[in-house]
Structures are given as structure tokens and as C-alpha cells.
Image 1 (tube, rainbow, N blue to C red):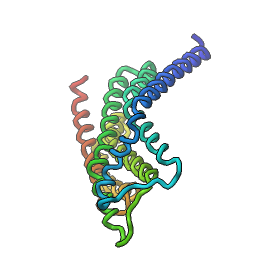
Image 2: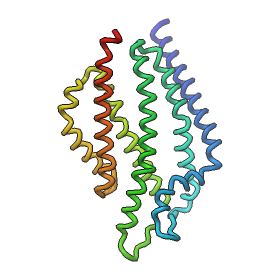
Image 3: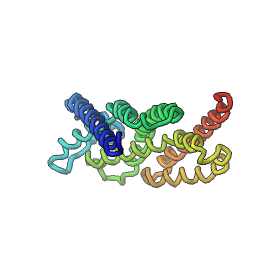
Length: 242
């Protein structure tokens, strides 16, 4: 097969995978959409629980009450279909990988996905109650906290992404060691810089209160340490594997 035929075959394969992913997302979205409003209520629960009795959220635009639950349904569909999306991605790239790369990619994809979900769960159940409690308590007397539902969704999604990415620290550390980019000892040496960087990231990606900054920085640091432990364990196992 010539170069052009090989390239066309890859494009056809890519089109097939993308079409399969699109259909899967659409089907999941159709199934989820009837419960879009309920999903938003669940997503807003950490904020609603911290509002004074009788407090509520508001919609400042005419179309917001429709489009915000729609966005939530799309996000839920993406998360539900994520394992299938990753599987299709794997099927597309696998033929071009060596056997040792295949053995490494699957655990990395699975662990990365699980850690991202763990980051979201940590943000929802641990961080949000603390952050929203601080925000509502800090409101001046006579000021009613009534958050716009669209702005609330943007804030929540941003926090989900921040904590989901932060929880990738062990995967990144293991990957760097496995690719021989940096050694375990070097990672231990730069620990102090990583701790400072974790607090800087906490200050950038969380609300301007010390508690939420600590709640991102400390898990990020601990996950970095966990990555060092796992990478060191894998290095000790390498001679045995040979």
C-alpha cells in the first residue's frame, strides 16, 4: 500500500471512530436530557444548602432556564460516554504502538480517567460545601446571595476541571519517570518547588480564600508524593520483569 493509500485509510478509520463517538454521545444525551433539570438541581445542591432559609438561585437571561440544564445534560453525556470515547481513541492509536507502549497506555488511560472523576467528586463533596459556606458567610449584612445559574455552572465546571487536572499528578509523575525524562531522586529533590507551585496553582484556580487554596494545594502535593512512590515501585520491579 502506497503512502497516499495509507493516509486515506487512516482518514477513513478516523472518520469511522469520530462517527461512532458522535452517535454514542447523541444517544446518551437523548437518554439524559429528560432529567436535565434534576441534574442541575443536584449540581446546585452544595450552593443551595448554604443559602439562608428561603434563598434561591436566579436566571438573569430569558433563555438561561433552558440552556443551562441543556449544558448540564451535555456534560453528563460526555462523562457517561467517556469510557467509550477513550476506547475508540485507543482502537485508533493502538496499531501504531509497540507492545510495551500498549501495556503502558491502557493503565495510564484507566488511572487518568478514574483520577479525574475522583477530582470532581472531591470538589463536589469536600470543596464546594466549604467554599460556598465561606462565600455566603462573607456577604455583608443586608445583602442577599442569589447566584445566577449560568455563572454558577461556569464556576462549578471550572472547579471540576481544576481538581480533575490536579488529580492527574501521579499519572504525570509516573509518565515522566517511565519515559526517562526525569528520575525519582530528582523528583524528590524538587519537592519544595512543587509544594510552592501547588499553592500558587491553588491561589489561581480557587476562590480568594485560604481554605479553598489549601484544599487544592495539599491534595496536589500528596498526589505528587503518591506518584513518586508508585514510580519508585515500578522502577524496582523493572529488573525482575526482564
